[in-house]
Amino acid sequence: MNPVTFIYDWIDRRIGLNDLTAKYLTGYLLPRNINIWYSMGSILLLIFGVQVLTGILLLVYYSPSIETAFKSITFIMNQVPFGWLIRTCHAVGANMMVLFLLIHMISVIFMGSYKAPREFNWLSGFGLLNMVFGICLTGYLLPWSQLSFWATTVATSGAGSVPFIGEYILEFVRGGKLVGAPTLGRFFVLHVIVLPAGIAGLIGIHLFLLQRTGVSTPPSYDGPVEHWKGEQYEYEKHPDGIPFFPHFLVQDLVANCIYAIFFFAIVFFVPNIFFPAEAFFPANPFETPAHIKPEWYFLPNYQVLKIFPNEFIGLIVQGIAMTFLAALPFIDIWPKRNFLKRPLFLTCVMLGIFTFIGLMIWGHFS
Amino acid sequence: MGVCSGGLLTLIGAGTVYPIFRFLSPLSVDSHGAKVAISLENLPEGEAKFFEFQGRAAVLIKRKNGNLSLLSAVCTHLGCIVKWEKEKEEFLCPCHGGRFSPDGTVLGGPPPKPLEQLPFVVKDGSVNVG
Ligand code: HEM
Ligand code: FES
Image 1 (cartoon, rainbow over the protein chains, first blue to last red):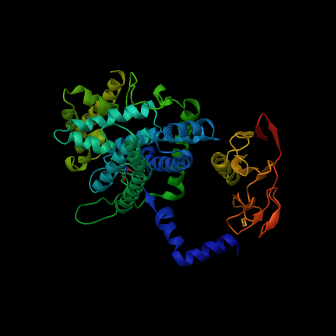
Image 2 (spheres, rainbow over the protein chains, first blue to last red; image 1 turned 90 degrees about the vertical axis):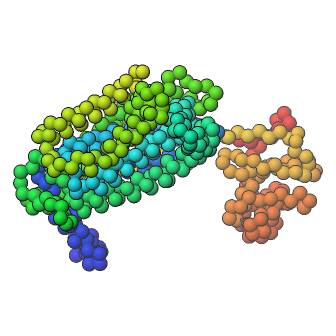
Image 3 (cartoon, chains in turn red, purple; image 1 turned 180 degrees about the vertical axis):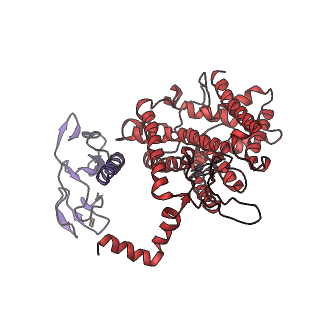
């Protein structure tokens, strides 16, 4: 017998590999017309994996103190072989994570797959969105550049506008009255261990829930489906579907390759697209740069805070919007899913997206 | 098909592993600290001065009779850093008790070889190494 088959057999007899492949790969049937939007999740897994890998590598040289942080980053960029590559991948990857998270979420909204019985999939996804925003915010401070310092000062200052306890919250978040060494310490711990572990755990839950409910059928599907009826737990089966392996695995890989082309095009041809000039100067607490703006994905929040005369009202408006988003599956309880047949829904979604993008552009030019 | 995808996978694998390997490889040391100059002014007789030379520990001693010697401070047994015993004018390795004379020869203990002598020149009251 050939040695590979022998080893495979040896393991299989003990833990049942064939059983696993049958259940999750060759015998795992998915709807025939699953589209490219269903691959966004696998792209997000790839991005998360790359972030973890490049993050661990950066930690080899990065030194989290206000005296050494900026120097260690400069050292990585200029001295360490391929340091520029690892760091650029990590910085660009963070932006891609947010971008594809938004795309994934919007496609879930359009296909109505947040609806019952997938409320938990949606909620775990919403949790991931918030944690990813958190990991981006904390990671931004770590290079201890002018950009890091002032963007974090602006981003955290909003908390101070909460009545009565705002001052205390602000000091607690920063570890002092101003952004400084204690802020770097706590953001570092959040960024390299607490949030990654939390995100990894929540991804596990997200995928577990997906396994339990079964992948949603695209709204336009006309074949036989065993839909959830609401009386008891039921796995959404697709009796005439196509196995995940090899067909959809290849489809996911193709999507990942297209993503990789897009990603490396940025890394190699416009590596500084996410680095404004302030990113290249070490933090100076006594000199605020002229035009300090948060990253593109925080621009809507930034602009909302500016529109309202009182920052606290701006915070409340954002809180309401986020709560509405989290509660979406409990508000939109109608079973119909095809967005082309739901004019009111379509109008609301488009308005929401345009408002978000509009605020982003406004925030950029204001 | 099999050859193509195998080749492609190898290419992607190599493209990932090579940068990571280089990233983690130790940076070459000879670019910095290739030359060291030690001023003799603040080295009293009978004292030793330990310093780093090309990434390794070295020691300069000025004996009571004024003679200079420059040695690697790395014990030839298992690589501990030797100590200078001022009164006895000899080196003692704290790990397993190896003893060396000021010119590096083994006086006792497990070390198999003498301490390595390093070439130097004296110029303008300082010792130049490398
Ligand atoms: C780290 C971030 C995330 C990762 C790695 C991730 C991963 C995945 C994967 C692999 C799938 C299955 C394939 C697919 O339909 O795309 C999936 C499905 C799903 N995700 Fe996410 N996701 C993330 C964030 C989110 C967010 C922010 C939301 C929305 C708030 C969300 C909501 C959903 C829902 C409702 C499904 C089920 C879709 C269906 O069954 O068709 N996910 N996710
Ligand atoms: S290492 Fe010096 S005596 Fe063993």
